[in-house]
Image (cartoon, rainbow over all chains, first blue to last red; front, side, top):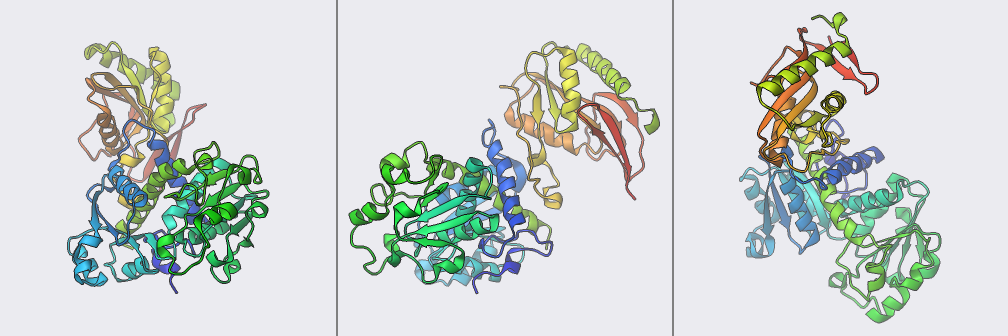
Length: 323
Length: 169
């Protein structure tokens, strides 16, 4: 099993590693959102930097490409006064044949305090957390098709800021659910936080088998699926992860599952439109919707910094206690 | 002074008199007043009104500047600090409710100095109690009291301001 709730929490029930949303309690997710709220307020101040993690060393260990996630993790660390080292693994030892465990051992020998890990294999962050020295915290910045918990939390933060609460909310996640670790984390988070209904809307070829068991209702028609919806989360078509013909063409995909102004009208009037980025304009979302008044896509990016500051400081606090 | 004799209006008068004297001695003309969350802001509001300072009251939440983060962790409900547009070259009257170890003031000074270099800072507190741990002392006080280790004193408010006294075994 990839998730082990004990591994994420220390003996006091505090967050030590942040690997997956699955298995975490509502109170902990709420604590992350509340803490992030404080950091978000601070980001409006003249001085945005605080000495909370002064003297700590954080390593960004990205085995896969990333722009937003990596940049916001770096900014979050910098604003907490931690020292951050971003490793470009593609040009590092791993590509020369070093094993993951040896890479970790070597970085540990440099006395670092936290790893932020992105990897193409599901369970990679969990594996590192299991094998890293006890004083090191591990944060999952996306593992294969498994989870991307900080992305889900910044989405929850954005939803809570726009809609105030989760009870009564109907949320639709649209697109490539099959390859999306973001969707998996979002579904868990929305169910834990008490959303009224989580729908997934996608062609059959882009849905995992038995997706209903995650606690969602399934739609294959965008117009029908968007009815009475408060929050629409569009997902990127992950063409780099598709190794067979799952779609006829991008233009046909847009016709059926792309969010256009007309389709958006079927949702509630005050529905917000989200996208974890990067967006493929004209494939899953039209430019007019992505840049329109209901879009909160750029707010998601801003909120990513505060949420990552919250998770980093909470995890570092737990491991500072030596539990 | 003992706990039973503490009367808030008397303390406020004492503090105001002490601040007036300090301002004269240090030639302060156009100060800005900054209060430390939460109790310090209530006291600072009174001082701000009494000094008739035009600039809005500055608020400081030093939670992210504390030195005991690793022991107590990050408080999820930190308030935004609101300092005046510039502190560079200004005379600052910094106010807190109770002065104890001095660590809060250390954190507050660090935060203020992140915003610029004030000309001078005058520290005023309603109550100074024993237990100092760093070489920082208030310039102006409402009263000084001696408490045993384990005794705690806290200001409650904002209206009315009162003193809450606890004895922790």
